[in-house]
Image 1: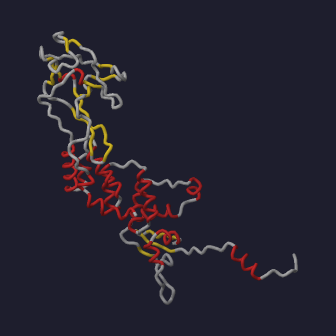
Image 2: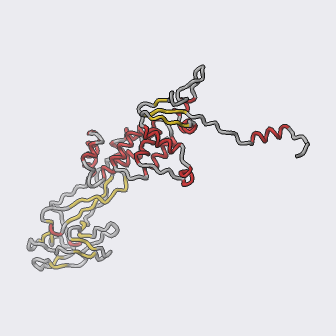
Image 3: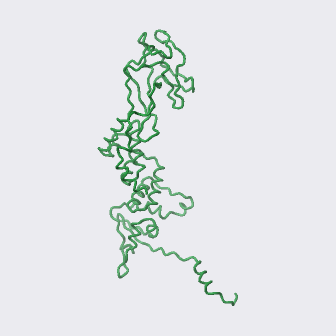
Length: 334
């Protein structure tokens, strides 16, 4: 070792680079009779509420709540299971750190969302929302969670799904949304439901189509003979066949815009009659689409009439009916 003196400035710089020990004092929280020893640094970093709590001056004797098990910080009105789930995110295990994932149940993520919202933990809240969005949530679950925790996207998604779902969610689920919300949603469904007046509706063979969404081609491109009277039925003849009792089924085919329903009209060949003899004009069989080859059952022919499958006449949307509530949640997204 050299006897040469080392400049004092060099020692100071070396000391500054030397790792310093981290002081992590424990604080004790009590929730539902369970005491949790917690190092508070992550709570302080993540939450404005805890940053303010631990920033308060201590008493003259330097005593404070939470300093030991006998004097814990009591958190009233919270669930121990929610707090335990939150700690798993704030203080991940080595395995979680290595894998880059934190595997929790849906109920745990809901608990984390609850606490992170109430304690103003913005990053944790966003993390919980992202993970819950990857889990299958029903439309009513989205609405109820959105209202409990001020999540705009779940509110609009859930309400829109209820309006466009077919069939509508069960009554017990709708009841959980409240009478006013359920009434509004049923009103929107009524306003945006496709309607069809079948009285006087002209049907031709050429108007019977393939129900495949990627095809929708005409199923009959050549004349056929009536199975009952053997009379020739032309493809474009409006006087060849008719709908005997107006029985058609209107089904949803999905939606590409919030609150707007897209539908198609499906009919059963048993409801058609030959205008000449009044009997069944077509066989109750399975037909092959001449365009795509899809096998179409006689109960599932699509009606290729102008206007069907287009937007509904009403432009009433969830965004308009619930705009005040949606706007009140948007501040939580920033």
